[in-house]
Length: 237
Image (cartoon, rainbow, N blue to C red):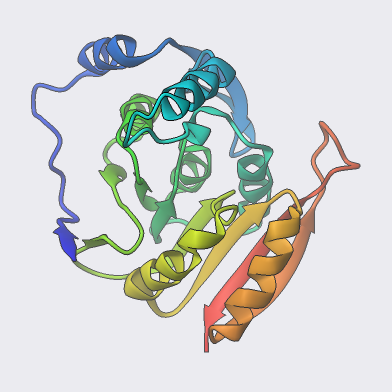
């Protein structure tokens, strides 16, 4: 198990300009204004997520190893649903972990509501953009790579763990379960959101058989009320 410090390891020379240059060397990106924690805020996002996915698929088909599908590049509605659900929570001062953060929307929603948040993803590319998006909140946001079943954050456990659209890959469920148990504080809870995917229904049954208490919440979003977001609330038994 790879242990990760929960203290800041960011370079003292890091700034928005250096981060923007790092991102631009790897992919096209832009600032996008979206609602986060009840206000319109800027989020650094990839400009062509579909093109990035096609490129990854072509490289995989050509036999290149180690190419990961860049699903992180899309801003998923599940994050907006989780953001909406958090609006009724008292989060000030709470220690929060976001898994598979992608654009960092859910973690930012918690940070803007006063939480101390560690935003993580299994791949490094999105974390450059997340550092940019959290720059104004860097006193309460840390950004780390965290791979399920491989990495573990040292220090105090988290009373709240967030994840949006991270249950779509069945093969990672055991590692996700392990990661949740390693990082969740006693008496804490996990909130996972998805757009009512069929595989999410399978995960719902699977995770309960692993000894988690389960509650489900339906969140309707104004952009498309006919397609609500599910929030899965888990507590360890």
